[in-house]
Length: 194
Image (cartoon, rainbow, N blue to C red; front, side):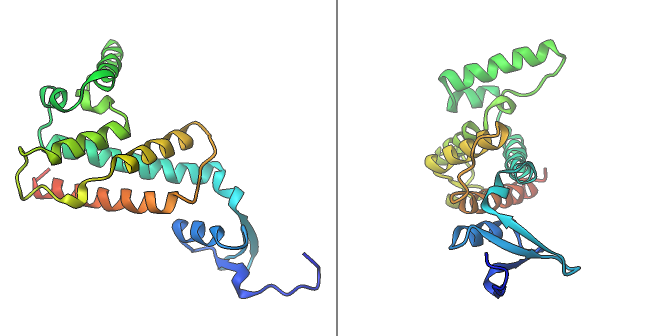
């Protein structure tokens, strides 16, 4: 950048800008922006900054919060090991059983559903909601997250956890859907008194 070039307003973002809006701005046009803090200090943010550990921590927190909401919802619906077995089968169920056995050796005892990965939990939610056994007041079609989106959530979790390259063009919509789902799950748990 030439020394005499003036900084334009389009090149500046406030330090208080949300994570999602920052991602969206960096996806359009320039892959960098100047960041203006409250104390008038100027910094630079680039698309590459979104691969760094602080961003990964934010994403992992979001995924973990969804996972906690799913676990709480399954608890409020009294999803026990037998019911879990009727919706899940094959290798996911066997892997969860193997994890639980290892945990028991360390004196940790959790219900089987705790050991499912995030995609399997989202698949379980979809299976339970699409069954005819649910109370009509609980079933909300908006809770059904597509199988494709569930895979994207799992892939995002794996990228975040294992320091793989994160494809940020997909992240804003994934985060939005995860937050919406989490809010609905919390509402269901509150209605059930849990």
